[in-house]
Length: 347
Ligand code: AMP
Ligand code: MG
Image (tube, rainbow, N blue to C red; front, side, top):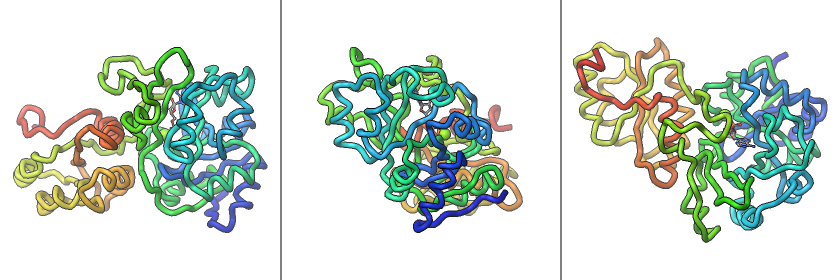
């Protein structure tokens, strides 16, 4: 069956598909999620199947507010309500201990915790309310591919395998939510995945230290979040990161090497190299916000470039503020490779 595109006035139709146990992708402020009734294990199993997602990678449960969360959790956390007050609806996911059997193991990956989030997207809040149940919502992409930031990205990946997608236009932020572990109240909260809600923003509200999972900083550490060991966000073409001062060097390199290169960068950086590139996808401006909004979309577009490309050069940004989340995704896409004009590496 062909996927249906639901418009803003068809939320009820979309909710009916969810009620029947079907899968409907929904817009959020971060990326599109692949929605299914979180209380229907068969439907949730389908989510893993169509994505090709490893079954030990737990899902985020999307809710209409903290009231809905309370029915499922064993224990709150002293900081939970104030974080919810400040950041919900918004790109902050909170991991809390749940009551035994509140969710099937297919949702939790066998853990006694669940990740909850209230997305800042009126259409999707309406969808959850209309469905009357919380929705699981991993990013609505085939596992390992860049996350979707438009309804068309979702359609590209799930043409015939899901019931529909609720179209809310392009997403605002462009990378997935910050995941914060609040499962153990005797320990400081820990960021398991960086997003638009930064460590500084969290510390300001909590008035206490927020830890960052070490594997986000050093590559050797085993990840705490089960899914984080998996390859993510990767286009099929090799990606290299390029820092601000390296673009002239990239241009010189391309002038003397017969490579079909794709460029993903802001206007200033693109301007230095576009004459030598086979394809350019330009961020709307040079800011980290525009880069974050355009990253996945750009990776997808260049991946499908007419005639094919040999390599993608993507702008790196300083790892501060939103740059932490942007670089976390880009490093995975690039397999941590930076551009280097070193004969032994590039020949
Ligand atoms: P995605 O569904 O692709 O947006 O990814 C959700 C992320 O949240 C994954 O990296 C999961 O590993 C992480 N996550 C979800 N639930 C939990 C949990 N209960 N404990 C730790 N990490 C979780
Ligand atoms: Mg994902």
